[in-house]
Length: 97
Image (cartoon, rainbow, N blue to C red; front, side):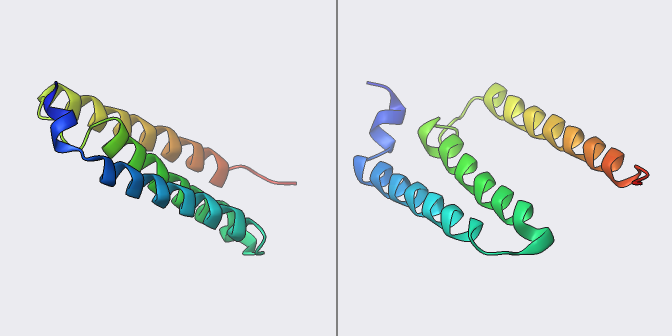
């Protein structure tokens, strides 16, 4: 049996699952509210929290002791932020007619 199975009890998995269900319901409820320019920001924030929970607990990143795993995660986040930053720069500098 791996060390990850010993350190992650079933109760914690159900707690994370309930949290993900609640956040999904929250996304559904917030979508009905008109927040004008903040609709996308709120939806992306909730989605980011859900993705973080999945990566940390269900993909066992929280208990990862390998440096390579942490390096891959940091590199992926760096390139994601780079992609989003360049996209927002392009979007902000367009001339709208």
